[in-house]
Each structure stands twice: as structure tokens, then as C-alpha cells.
Image (cartoon, rainbow, N blue to C red; front, side):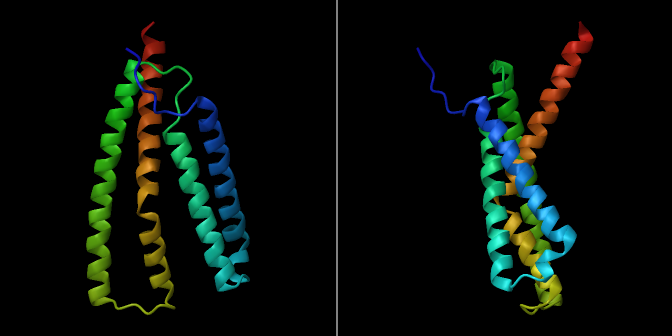
Length: 154
């Protein structure tokens, strides 16, 4: 019986890493040089949205691509990593919900405030992106530990 295969090929993972590097370099360039201060609000919002989409797509490509050698252990490692990432993302979302609601009660923010902008930025990024990021970090770290132990046991 043939099993269904839901993962992308390894080439897509490479494309995802390249897209993520481009998004991070653009962000560092704009923020590091301070170009966002000279851009209009509409251009800044467009840039933030574009970086958000490119980051989400790149993390999606990385998360749902095969490793070079995919076996049963790696599949089980994927499941455990996904469960751990979902738990951590859920806890972070609950903590942020509590912090932001208490902050809004005692520290009412206006739309132009610098702190309001930071709150809305965290709200935007505290969606699916941290879960993908956590999944990738947990999975890759676990895979690295497994391979390191395998090499040193021989």
C-alpha cells in the first residue's frame, strides 16, 4: 500500500532559506540604516506587509519540506516538534493576550504612540509565524542532537 506524501521536496527548503535570508536582510537594511524614518506611512505599511508575507511563505516552505534523508525517526521527530511548537506558541499567545489587555486597561494608548506601534507589531507577528519558527528551531535542534549523538556513538 502506497502512503500519501504531503511534504515538499528538499529543493523547496533551500528556496525557503533563501527567501528568509532576503527578508531578514531587507529588514536589517531598512531598520539599520533608518530608511523607515524617511518613508511615508503607506510605504512603511506596504514594506511591513511584504516582509511579513515573504517571511511567512519562507517559513512555510522550510517547515513543510523534506530533509535530504527522510525516515521514520525523522517523521516522528516532526510530530513531536510540531506538538512542542504548538504548546509554546499557545502559551506565548495566552501570555501576550493577558499582557496586552492589562496594558490597555492601565495604559490607554493612542494610535500615534510609539508604544502602540510596538504593541500592534507584536500582535501582527504573534500569529502563525512564531509557531513555524519554533517548529523549525525545535525540529532542526533535535535533528542536530540526534545526528551528533549518532556520530559520537560509533
